[in-house]
Image (cartoon, rainbow, N blue to C red; front, side, top):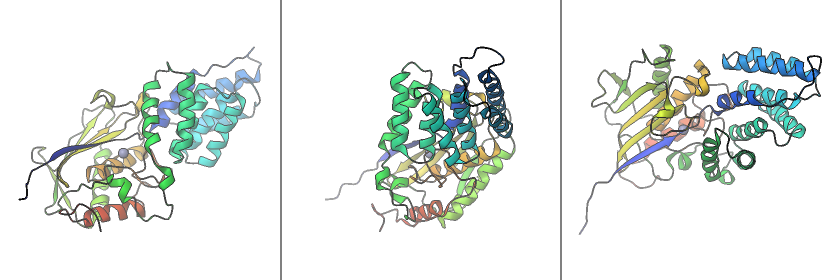
Length: 353
Ligand SMILES: [Zn+2]
């Protein structure tokens, strides 16, 4: 005799979309020893400080110009800091090879430098080399167990240790197994999804275009699914997906400081009943959110909300674990193929064939 029962589960995803901004501000605290205003290290340190102020106002080009000026005073007591910050700024410009070289240089000058170690870990995380990321984050934690972000970095390190990069096949056409974490969940797709997007007016940092980014993300992903469509509804009650804006992600549900967005879904069996997306309008440590960052975060969280509860191991996919390398804000071919595969999976089956 068959026994039938309903199983209701909560699936949740936590993302770390912009750790680089938080780390930029830490670089401010780098200790530099100089003797006088005539010291080249003093001049370089002043330029570097101005560069950090520029980063806090999201003026990355200005920061880059100042640091490239500061680099001309090499070598001096501020060289480690200058190269650390250059690495950070070049990561923002997606010039990852050059960024890596500057971080290496910083650590060759000062192997135990706090900011350089942390930024090197972040660099490897962003480029998908999680094993190396763990090495640098671990060294950071060993040397600076009392750092204000030690708990955040520890959490990040624990997650990175679980990523199985050895299994990654670079020619893979999708990341279905990682994206579904081996237990797929999706909407039935029978009727258009009813999506409630909360008005963002009054939420600090919210800009009207953010709602458009969210709509563009819903358009792109539902199209990629080849099954779904969506319509906007004015009442969160009865909506399949709700989207809310918050200024302080850190205070909701004990999330980490590096979180830029979150999506969680309730499912019955394999079928998602509803998803709740929360997007943070204020970047970590008070730095501005750029339109590019917001487009990316919306795209990433909507991907979670539609059923990709895991992450892609490939840095150029929207569903990559952290902010991805490429400048494009659209879905990659692998993102599209993964979503299509998810929605081609029979809801009555346990496995995709
Ligand atoms: Zn995520």
